Image (cartoon, rainbow, N blue to C red):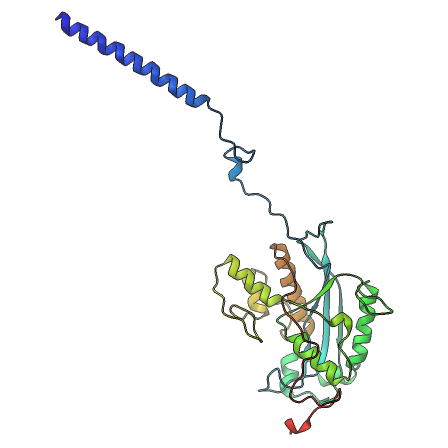
Length: 306
């Protein structure tokens, strides 16, 4: 009996010692300071940080979407003549000294119809597509005059020098695909017997390509290889770009130059808001030639178009 009591007493002593020892370790662990990561506590460090907007290389954007003469069944090799010249001028509302910005605003608009000279009568297909009537272009100025008027527009906004035409501010042209300047403007300058103005030269911003790149980066949409006529990724017209960016549907009439331009400007504004760096991404060759071009400016080989 005495042996049994001694065993019970020893077990109690051991249990008490284990309990106190375990309690001390728990208290020591409880007293350890919280882990600090990069100067922040563990919970704070998991909070999302405000993303700083990117450095934007351009101060102003000239959004352009021309309309041009066209014949059903032809492609970009046909000698199109520009019949509408619409531009929306954008600039930053929040650009800091380092060039960081994410909010674009509309500064002004320019619009003019243009009178063609090679094929002055619109086809029914062209009139239906663009909504431009023959009367609109019959009373319109020639392309050279339109560019003179637009040059004054640029001077009024301090973008170019009134004497030399040299840029005074950093501005870039922005279009839906490269076609408007790469094809239509280059061809029109040839037909109008003029060189491409200095303020129209240089690489441009292909807005469609920026939307496709943004999709590939944020939505894991696979890209396809680019070609000379299309950006990488699935082709997106203006309406599909608006949908991809969760914007309201197309506003106005599709294939109206000014309405197309305004909607492209909406897309550019949204890309900026989403933190996209809006830099040039399409090259333009001002000396590009087509098979129908003669040796002299304005000379068109008519035998190709009986």
